[in-house]
Amino acid sequence: MNTTDSALYIDEMGYAMSRLEIDSDHCEDGNAIHEDSSSGQSKMPATFLDNEIAQITKLKSTPHQQLVQVGIGRPQLPVSPVKMLAGRESNYSGRGRFSSADRCHLLSRYLPVNGPWLIDQMSSRAYVSQFSADGSLFIAGFQGSHIRIYDVERGWKVQKNILAKSLRWTITDTCLSPDQRYLAYASMSPIVHIVNAGSAETESLANVTEIHDGLDFSSTDYGGYSFGIFCVKFSKDGRELVAGSSDNSIYVYDLEANKISLRILAHTSDVNTVCFADETSHLIYSGSDDSFCKVWDRRCLIAKGKPAGVLMGHLEGITFIDTRGDGRYFISNGKDQTIKLWDIRKMSSNVTCNPGYRSYEWDYRWMDYPPQAKDLIHPCDQSVATYRGHSVLRTLIRCYFSPAFSTGQRYIYTGSHNACVFIYDLVSGAQVATLKHHKSPVRDCSWHPFNTMLVSSSWDGDVVKWEFAGSGDRPASLTKRAWKRHFYDEYI
Image (cartoon, rainbow, N blue to C red; front, top):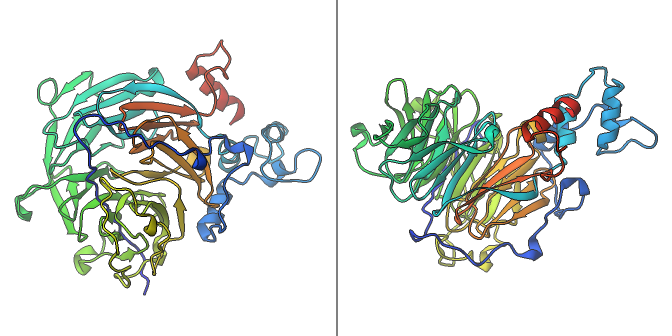
């Protein structure tokens, strides 16, 4: 029996030694595709996505009919940039400019696959890499207690170098507040720290040069015991933090009241990932090592005391969830070596099916995925689509939708244990690009919200950027920033 909302839960306990480790198993050439998307060459799976989201995604990047018909010959997609620019200059659409769908149709063909260019290199593992919502800042978190905030518009200058306080094991997650004034960071501890990201102080040494306020999630109301936090996210209004923990719980922290406002004993194992479903913050998605994704509706949680729904399909634990932001669709990365796309309208009111006990012993922290498990399918898989090719081992690998502004969320991209970044077409499932540079697992990566740029960070300590255009593709007379402004003014 299906309900209306669902939740998810994930775990992470990346197995590793404290020293920097270089793994030998990189991307295999046989599975690698490194190309720009305009070539039209890609691996096409036998089945295609047949769901409402396929139509929504196509509409988001389908150009105006008048632009399709520009010039001589039979109208066909994709429309060449020359035809689209000619149609815009002739005002074929009657708008005098590109619509968001026109823009996505043009830009989504140019993937950030060239490079990479080195941004930074540290002597410890990189665990987190995230662009700010406006793309002006970039945050990287490392196992060696360092978090760096880079000013993207000023040549990736380090705006703030943060030395974390009370670090246990590693920086597990960071999150920038919506107004970009504060940064929250978590580790394998019940304390989440808040730093003033906008202060003039470049070197932020905890409680020496700056105060790192500690938010205690181990409230005495809930036992006051110790646990680790895997994931932390701000609400859209910046008033709350949601966190997933190793005590199988979801926590919501009220920043104005300075206390925990909600604790949900959400799963039967570590909650590796949580996020708010959309701007309202009413729905929370969670993912866990118990292999279930769950949806929690805060409006009826007190009355029901259980999730709005459960989504089954992963055979192993879930490492990360990313929401599409519409309160309906999200993706999850799983230790069964798959990404799954979910529609919460397909969720069940409770767990109706279990894949059963596995016939093999396996721990993702130090073992390869068993060959006999690669073809297994959950008997009650409720996912809309499944994407395979990357590997999820050793650590909680993260996956995301590509940006709405430039691609219409047409792609899904993910880090991988085999030191690569994989980009999949959401609708066809095709692996359209594989970015190869790193020598160790890529735990996190981030696509710029507006530009054709992607940054990947790895356990090899490298933080690198990938772009569509090479450094020599812009006029020598223009600075990089001026060239970006020129490109968007002229063509978008």
